[in-house]
Amino acid sequence: MALINPNDPTEVASAPAARSTGLRASIQRLFAGFKKSPFSPNAAPDTVLPSDSPKKSTQAGTALADVLDATLFQAFFKGPSAERLQVYKDMEEMLDTVDEVESGLFILGTNATAPARSGEAPFKIEWDEEDVPDVVKEIAETVIERCKFAEKVYPIIRETLLYGDSFLQLVVTNDLIVSRVMYMPPQTMVRNEQLNGLLMEGNTEKEWAFEQYLDNEFVAGFYPWQIVHLRWNRTGSKIYGRPLLYSARPAWYKLRAMEQALVINWVTRAFARLLFIVDVTGLSSGEAQAKIREFKRSLSMTRIDSGTAEKDSLSVAKDIFLGKSYQDFGGEHLSGLTDVKTLDTSSSAFEQLDPIEYYRNKIVMATRVPKAYFGIEEDVNAKATLTREDIRFTNTLRYCQGLGSEAIRAAINLSLLLQGFNPSNYKYKVWWNDPSAADPVEKANAYADTAKGDAVYLQEGVIDRQYIAERHIGMSSSEWAQIKVRADAEVAQRRQDAIQERQATQVPVGGTSGNSSAVDKKVRQPSERGQA
Image (cartoon, rainbow, N blue to C red):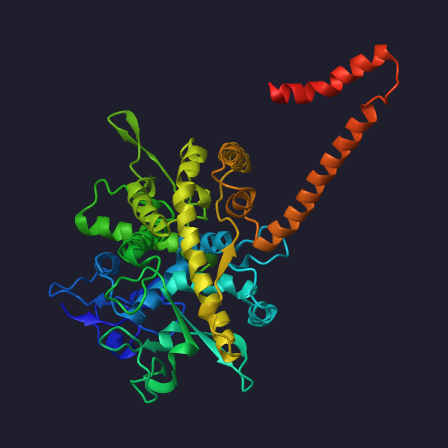
């Protein structure tokens, strides 16, 4: 079967004459609306239209149905390409056409980078040692502020999830200062590795660690320290990551074809059809055909005045007036056969949406976001389901935060090297806010249970107060040091107050014997109990 491209005027013009101009225009408009990619307006559609079969059809409606059936069938079984640039293109189109994809990326990005309080950064740098020079801390804080990581970490994580790869250039000035982080489009970047898996360190084309190409033309090369390559869900044998929704592409192809078929069905069968029954009793075959043609012509012609008429199209919005007579058959008056009925053109596809729901669920599952977060959970126990799924969802969010930590650490380490400090001599962590989305009441109950366990371990000498403050409460070493000073001062003050109160209750020598015995007994009781 020969194939023609509906967007190519030369091929459309060479189609058989049986296909009318109106049909070609309808097909072109139809596929221009459904198959055009938003990122390449002038690109040809993914599918092509079959031309007439050897048995040519002169029915425009039948030809259109054949074209649609063949095209949707081909789109439904279209397999995804493993080529990296095509994968990126599919991800972009999924982002623009599937609401669940947009919502899933937004939920993951915002939950991973949400600050604890409004106006605060979503992360902080915690140094493992207290004797870290202040200049080192200042370099780290300065590069974070200069590169605006607090604002950029969300788009960095989002783009890495979407494409599976993010290439961030650390721009260095002549003063050896990391001035900013520049996002490099992943479609233009290439990673070059040696046979042992290490990045290349050359300075010529095909030997740079990272290279940028535009329209297959070499643009620039980069050393390993200039580019931070973030990779999501990378396997050990691959040098590039995999998008979050990589496995959902087959389901997306099928879902797109099914939704287009539904839309076409709804558009072509939007209104009921009218069935006109014309009474041709007693007429020959030729007379019956002539009467039907005259009847059709009368419905499409509007009389303006005597001898003047114009063509008028019949629509569902217009009323129809027909004359109906009674005939005498052997003294019995019977109604004429002329009538108008409505044909129900509705399809069961309007109600049987389970296949579409099936493929939509596959896409939602690929986002790794619990279905209840989308607001489409139909189970009455959605809250309980969300509580169980929150642990797995939190692990995914921590993985997302790890991507941001990798970019932040690369910028800090490079800044320290450029200023003459060895980053390996200073241990630090990038602390993020708790990504858990559990209910606040459940969180409070969990903290209470943890506090009870800490009290037992503290009494047994297994842990100390600093361990509890830093590991379970999340305090930094400097915060704990300040709180410890205040806490020790309060404890010392309470002891001093207790001593003064005890001394004030003691009776001087020579006091009344009746009162002194009672006072002495109260004073001696604590020590006596201690001895016992």
